[in-house]
Amino acid sequence: MRLHVPVLVAFACAASVDFADAREMFRCNGSIVRTGQTIPEVLARCGEPDSRESAAVPVRAIGRLGGSYVVGTATVEYWVYRRRGGQFPAYLTFDQGRLRKIELIYYR
Image (cartoon, rainbow, N blue to C red; front, side, top):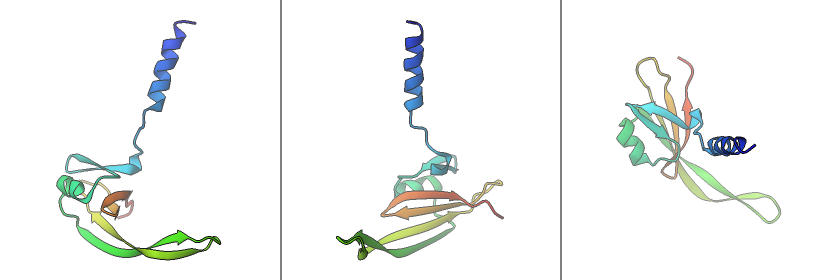
């Protein structure tokens, strides 16, 4: 039984490691880009995107009776990198200056 305890502890430690989901990262110019990075970090790794759009979206709050109301706006940016070498294009969504979502566009 003593032999199994270290093995179980090692397995529990390995299982608790936070593995990044493949949808939360992509490779760009030999670097890995992950969600949570800032706009300057992504620009340093990938350069300027092929297309770039921004939109003001409403920020909502929940009222006392359960209804929602607009309390302001936030700027959201949408970037597209048309990657080379047979890789699918990457569609990035930035909210408040941080990368929030990475989508690989699986159509041609």
